[in-house]
Image (cartoon, rainbow, N blue to C red; front, side, top):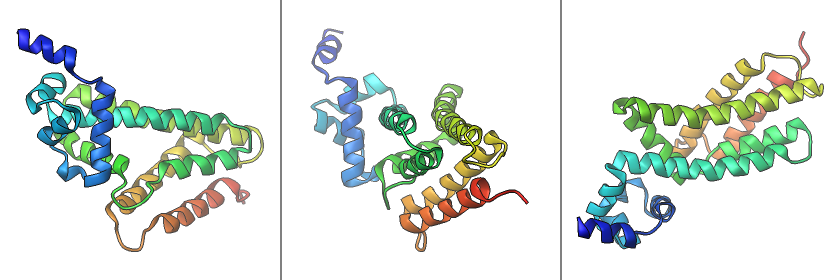
Length: 203
């Protein structure tokens, strides 16, 4: 027990561990992220990491939540800045779509999604909370654009669901490096969908 106490006192802040995990994913890929390797990066043993996170699944989910927290703050700044609803919608899409093949945030998302097949209710709830934040912000943005007359009157929640499904599908293609769906091509498809769905006058 005395050894465990010293480990707690000497351990780096949890955020430092999560930041190191994301850095390793960005530099080396998720397949290179091991508890032993991460431990060496932050000066802890793999046993101590397991003491704090209990499992690699929990470590990955907490790393995703940490990364999403940073993205959420950036999303909040984008969505509250001055400008038209369309301009802020474009900024939302830019933030959503991965930068390219092996984007670390999306690589982590895909792994957490894959592991969620065997996840417990708590983990599923935490994943749903992340998804819900992106969805609520998009619904509010579309509703604002409708109220300001920038977008045609549509069901904001339904439109947000369809747009996020499109973004998710294309983002997976970009993240895994599927040929024929690089980021610029994806952005062109999404802009076309937005124009047809929200900007084209109803007939």
